[in-house]
Image (tube, one colour):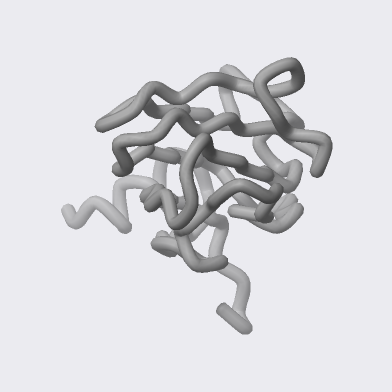
Length: 114
C-alpha cells in the first residue's frame, strides 16, 4: 500500500505538500511566510540562516512578540492533532539579518482544484 493510500484509508483525506509557497525568505521587515489556509494539516518551518528568526501568527512579529527560531536549524513543527486551529493561521517572520532563508513545508488536504 502506498503512503497516499494509507493516509486516505486511515484519515479519509487526500494530501499533498508544498515547499516555500510564499518564497522562503525573511529579513528586517515582517514578511508573510504562509497564508491563512484551513486545508493545512501540518507545517514545518526551519531557519536555514545564520540569523535569529522570529515567527508570529500576525504581522506584529518581533523579539517581544514571536516564536524564537535559533540560527542554523531552529524550527517550528505544527500538526492538526496537537495544534488545532492555530495551524490554519497565517505565519509571519522577521529576522535579525536581511535575506534570511527559511524552509517552509506545508502538508495540505487536497481539493479537486489542487
